[in-house]
Length: 262
Length: 299
Ligand SMILES: Nc1ncnc2c1ncn2[C@@H]1O[C@H](COP(=O)(O)OP(=O)(O)OP(=O)(O)O)[C@@H](O)[C@H]1O
Ligand SMILES: [Mg+2]
Image (cartoon, rainbow over all chains, first blue to last red; front, side, top):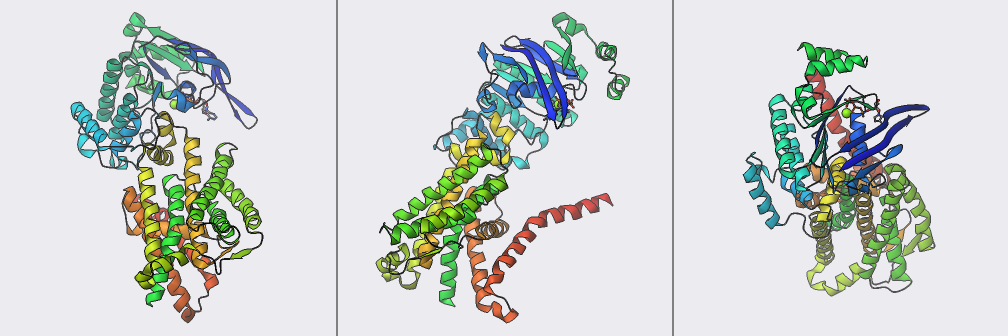
């Protein structure tokens, strides 16, 4: 489904070179759900940016279902790749209403001089939201800036799924939310991923979550994939084992230690 | 006093069309575009040339002016999106280039429309039954027409994409929209409106002058800010209505200042200084308020 071959990314900052991704090879089957963990600066976000196309790779090729998408601009890839980032503000247009945002998402890139939100579509969106039962149907005509972070992230997921992508990229998309909202968003995400059979890449700092969700787990460090487990191996691994894995690479940092103590 | 009021309304609505363009770039697209100081004159220059030299129909020159302004805006948009020049500098460069181009179009620093059938003269003659408000009625219809056309445009799929581009680029790219195209389109339409306004003002005043566009951005911002303060709404229709109201109020203030300002030693040439100071005040007010609140929280 998705395949990365010899992909690296070098950021040039003045005279300095910063290797963010180092010769990564990665293959995902259709419908596979991959969780990604790794310390700060490991290159997790950069990896997703490369797949989304917002960052061009320095070397290597990226293929999506037998099509080389390495040089395809991000807005074209977006028709097949949905993406949700950590910042709830980034995923929606805050000055537009909930219904207008959803209408935008259901257009799948069509930009004509037809009405953006005809009343027919407004009714359909309301009906769809009533089924979901998340209380959003009463706030269809409120501007998104009046929603909470959790509600916005829920809206972002709705928008991502309306566009019916084949691949979903999630970059710590619950990190900015309180625990109950985060749990709600995770439930929503999993429901959609399952229903649409999406191929999913999810970055998280929560190791328990990384083990619990999905069917494959990779650990990244300094731009490389240092651990890749799936199936039985993933199901039976533990947070302690993963932390040991980190320490074997001499990368125990305070954060990880803290997480084990708690 | 009554004619003074009528003149203020006429001018407010005529310049209000330019303010709608500035609203589109500044508020909707989040693109502070300085091209307008030049494209306003481009509209006036082309209209005056076509009317005085080639005997064009005064209504059609309004449309031609719009197209010319849109072309100028397109160049600004491309300078920014294709050549990666900052938004401010792209606008400034285009504005300066337009200065030379406008002089080329007119062939000299100003063109008179004396004894030429301008829209205002035609309307005055055709609607003489309306008496002194004939021109006001015409300009009102024109400005409202532009307002509703802009409202409608911003409610289309394309308009949605444009608004979202100004709101959150990450989001709209993820929705499959090329933000560069949207920026070029927005800046083009905005400058089209500004040039249309310039063509109208030139006919209204009976002349075009190469310096008549100086400060268009600031007076336009003043109208946008006054309108946004008086009519607080996130609905497009109310926002554009606010821009026209803001423009009228601004012109009213200008007319009154010019008429009675001498009492406090005010000169016409002081207007741009005062306007800019007002705009600065309006722009920094939110930051100042925020800073004060933060101080309170810190204590
Ligand atoms: N636009 C950029 N310009 C320069 N360097 C960058 C850029 N983006 C990322 N980097 C660098 O690349 C490295 C990897 O960054 P990345 O954001 O992918 O890390 P991450 O694994 O997502 O970390 P975190 O867990 O903190 O989100 C970092 O060292 C970062 O400083
Ligand atoms: Mg990151």
